[in-house]
Length: 266
Length: 266
Picture 1: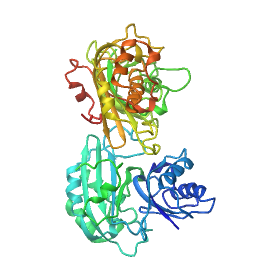
Picture 2 (picture 1 turned 90 degrees about the horizontal axis):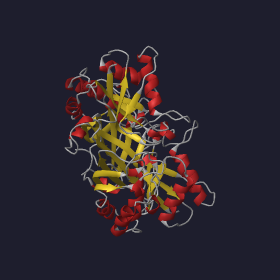
Picture 3 (picture 1 turned 45 degrees about the vertical axis):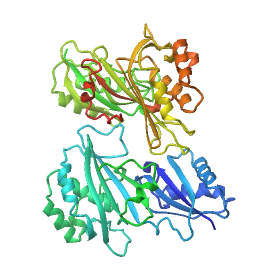
Picture 4 (picture 1 turned 180 degrees about the vertical axis):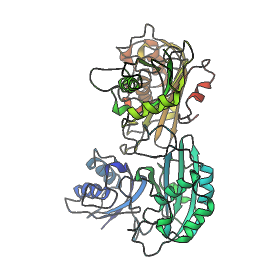
């Protein structure tokens, strides 16, 4: 069966997340139902690089669908966009996948942004896209503490209880905290992440930004390998899956694969 | 009566525009009703620098309210934000206005961005914030044609039929068209604008971007002083009032007055 690779953007507020769920519309269901219209009504199986949670956005999710016969990739893209209207979901690109390629298992790099709106006034234009933290946060302190998490570590303190990964060992390649005006952006890159890892890191670094925890506290939390030691899980709407890479890991080539991804601030 | 100057952000989708209307909730009504809670229930009059239309957003609208007695400005800001919940409206800053200052009549500069999402796929994360134009637009040609509109001209070809300004003479200080990935941004600055002026310019320049009209056509349209000659009125959701300046016009100081305004690409 021919496999197609999709570059997908969506507003997480409209979905219960990527994976199918009994309690509402998932991105996976929306794409599979649209794809089945292209497939003579036969069901279509899909998979995605990032199993985003309810409320989490994607600017550059990568997914796959297997269709019963060959179609021009542009036609697959246009048909999926037509059949998913008016959902806030867009297939930006579609290509024929190479033999043996898998959207999830072939991925070598994933990048997320977590955005905090750090001002007294509530969110208006960014409502549903940011975590509003009204007390001032020291983003420099957050960045310094973040560097303690970069590298290969057991991230048990930052994984959700329901995380299904066999091991909590992950290599965080980059974790940068920058500020532009009212917005604090955490940019995280790794081959793969644990469930809630970025949101748990964001919630923990926010405590550093408030001055409640020091760098030493972050080192101790990481070493404890105990989820109860870290901070709260930051809310989903601040998180966006920016891009997924399939090249050699860490060579930065991944960014080329999502021409639409917002330029990351460095 | 003490006058307060407000810096206001809102998502235009939730409102029928700034001015009060019989057919729905306006930003003006939302602010005046919240302010009246601060004012012992007595009605409060407000005014704004930009009378934004239904669907038009603001990142840095400036408004005024007159209250019956003095209040700490921070308390005015917080109370307005509290009483306008959960509307997508935020009072970012509040200061006591100097004697004789008027939000609308003292303004010397207004800046708007009009954003076109120029890609085949529909809008998802930017839904409600952009005009989606699926055919490729030549932003360089749009920028060159835009320069013919810069300066002091009779903009009758670009004003709405219902525009109430006595004269169609306006001085457009800046009109820049830039592209970042899929997004084409028109940045317009002037002391003041005619009704629908930016949206009519955007709709007209889009025809240049498609290759239907040349620079000579734009010059002829401007010279004709006839609204029927120009292009369509681009939809409201692509437009955002970025900032309002009260300093000497054209000195660029206006940008300092809205710390939240997105940095303009130059």
